[in-house]
Length: 214
Image 1 (cartoon, rainbow, N blue to C red):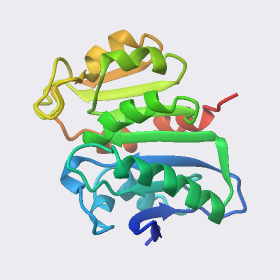
Image 2 (cartoon, rainbow, N blue to C red):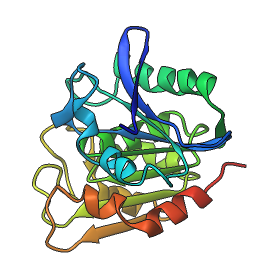
Image 3 (tube, one colour):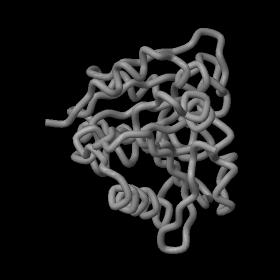
Image 4 (cartoon, helix red, strand yellow):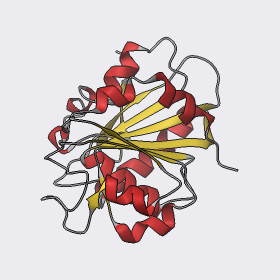
């Protein structure tokens, strides 16, 4: 297994550490609601972790995958787990803090908007996959490089308007209008499960790893 189980303050998370002395760029991955739990394993089956496993020999970044206990989004103790996992991993291996990236799908895409806006000074770039965000957060995201992906026919988190999980948020098509500096990609005819198309695109990684905070 490329990922290794770690614990911080009683909570399990997973980390991938590439070969070499570092400092390494670091990607924090936030999963969807279907992978919520405290088993420390289920969230490795969907999204970014399978891609990293497939490319473990040459993936150049640390990947931190905290598991959200839920019920919805990385808030409270789940938000704390994200921040504490970063600190714990930084004590284990050298992380380039100027190249710390946040990405997530569905629930995790929504939390990528949320945590990107709450801690804009942390992140060199954000990648949001089939998520939704709060319009009021757009101003705090205006300086962060962002790529946003959505399926045209997503019925779980629609690309435009609200959705059943969070009445404050709107789909990422709407958020992209408020974030004119962001790159928005909508896959014609696609539904909710677009994450493999996103994470398997080499051009995404070329762009992401080129982003660096001043």
